[in-house]
Image (cartoon, rainbow, N blue to C red; front, side, top):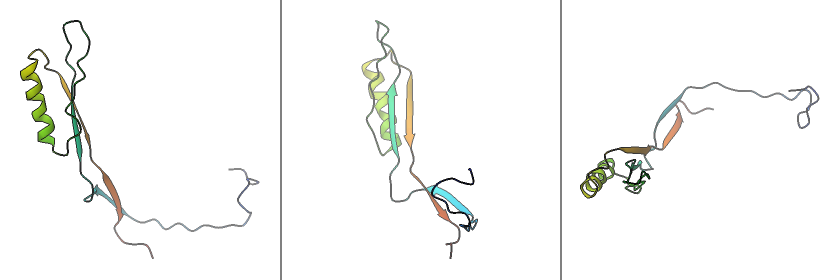
Length: 94
């Protein structure tokens, strides 16, 4: 940053206090899971069918078995999981 940068007067000071933080799952928000078929139809196009967003991982995975029962040649799947996280200071700054 140049000394003559706009928006910062010479002589301004800032104080930073370094504190420890913990990271963990956000208890107020649900995880989301989605399973998608990566199998191909006979013409070589990807199926791309999916379970839709599910808050229960097992429900998303159960969709795989339902889909493969309808299309036994579709055996490749991918699962996306979203887990909301939060950061919390170990000690609140004063």
